[in-house]
Amino acid sequence: MSTDAGFGGFPEFTAHDRLRKARERTGMDQTEFADHIGVSRGTVSNYESGSTTRLKGVVLKMWALATSVTVEWIETGNTESPRPENRTGTALPHLDSNQEPFD
Image (cartoon, rainbow, N blue to C red; front, top):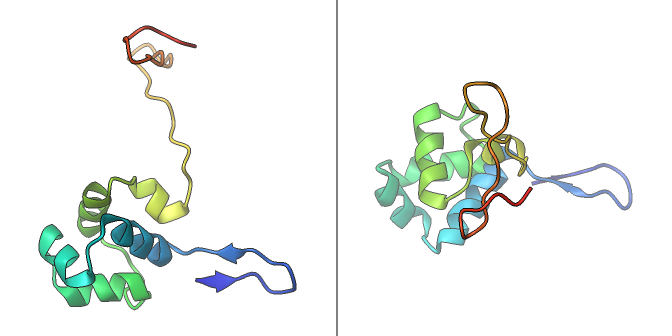
């Protein structure tokens, strides 16, 4: 994690920080998580520490799936996801728990 220069700056989380946070949220240590997604513990350690600068798509997707976060959140920190569109290009309605449109 890096911090913004100057007094009162907010921490800036990197993709590597978000990978670690997502894994920690599962309650698994690095070894358990590595076994869970089918990579070595060293790979998990390298991804979380930033030693691996290029995040590979397959590992990133497995990480996201195993931690219930989106690849977009890992890469950018963005929690907003675009609404799916149907074939006519219009957004699909949001449904409540009774499958009724609410917006």
